[in-house]
Image (cartoon, rainbow, N blue to C red; front, top):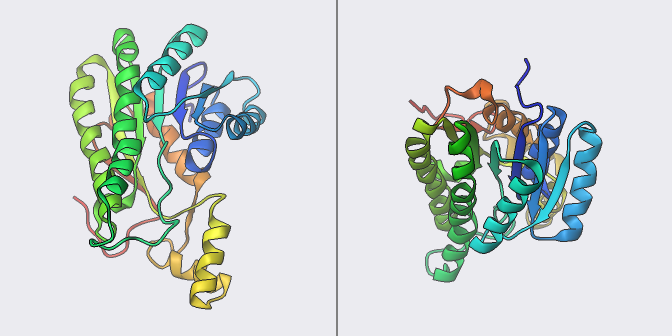
Length: 267
């Protein structure tokens, strides 16, 4: 299936690693011009090299920007429009990594910790969407995909649930406001996903539990219908389809990309 992304201009935030990097690479393979956004210039340049090798016919532009800073976001979008002529796709994936540290209890959870999660993920996604929306609505078409997470559907991490539910609420509101102008907005909820951070996290679990690597991986996979953990590239395949004109019918809603949620019915 041709996703009709050839020559489209796509911005991917959080693009120096993980799901964001995989999304940038997959967009490039579909012929899109890809703007990689992250805060670390060195990591961003290394990521841009990997994306260039995936889509040699595409333009790949690394731009250092901080999504917690509205002026930085607006300057990034202005540069993209100036250099590439517009914006067709936004993939929001810039967020503080989940699952890397013990989850604090209510007594241990600070206001600042929750505010940092909301500022980076919810407000960060809002800032980028707000900056690209005028360009998308002016041309009568655009796609925004917000990468959130399955913590939106379960308890266990107060800050994690708040930030992901917030992204889902933002998505639905953006879809209703921008839809009449031809812009679709959708949220993707990955579960635990295999990225470059996974070996370190597994090593920490092995040390804490005494389990083997195989046992830790099997434990992580038990929560999925497929009984395996999805890779960042597999999540990116879903995101990139939803970012394409082929997914015009999908807007305002949430799509899980986690290998299935056992024992749960969503309707």
